[in-house]
Amino acid sequence: MTVHKQPEARNFKAKALDEVKKFAALTAYLWVLFFLLGMYRTLLLKENGINPWTQGYVIVNALIFAKVLLLGEILDLGAGLRKRAFVLVVLGRTLLFTALLMGFHVAEEAIGALIKGQPVVERVLHLGGGSWYGVLVYAGLLYVMLLPLTAFREMSYVLGKDVLWDIIMQPETRSREPR
Image (cartoon, rainbow, N blue to C red; front, top):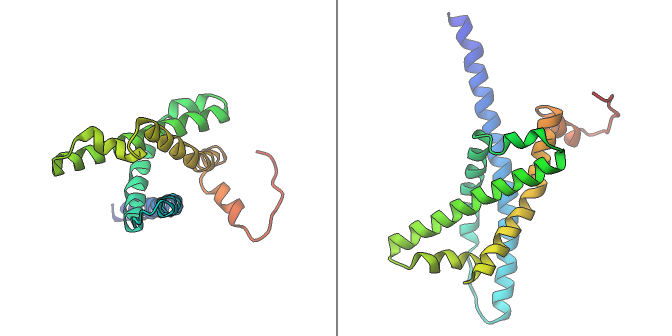
């Protein structure tokens, strides 16, 4: 019995390490994107004489959103789309993950509004600078930001675990035989 449990323990450790790596990569990707968007927003506001500094919140947002994206992956969100053409899988899954993130973000803002006794709609509209149009633009930005991530993850799914990562990280490019 002990011999049988060692591979299970090693398998659990390998899976846990894999999840930590995914979480770290997602967090780094989202942090860079949110940081750049935050810096752009800061520049625009400074241009109009307003000086907000919200960059500390960016890393927290990246950590939370990375966990939400991993939850979507664990739930295999949009897996049924994998029967379709690759481009439709990427576009469709990106749309689903965008909806998941926006839904989470709206819920987060609504809970914050309820805790602080603020109007929920006003707080949700704050995501988009105070208008529904802005919220849609924000969702569109999230969608475009998630497209390369989703494409990378779907290519990894099609090619096999770590194959794409190994191709990208190899010091030399080797020709590969078609599968």
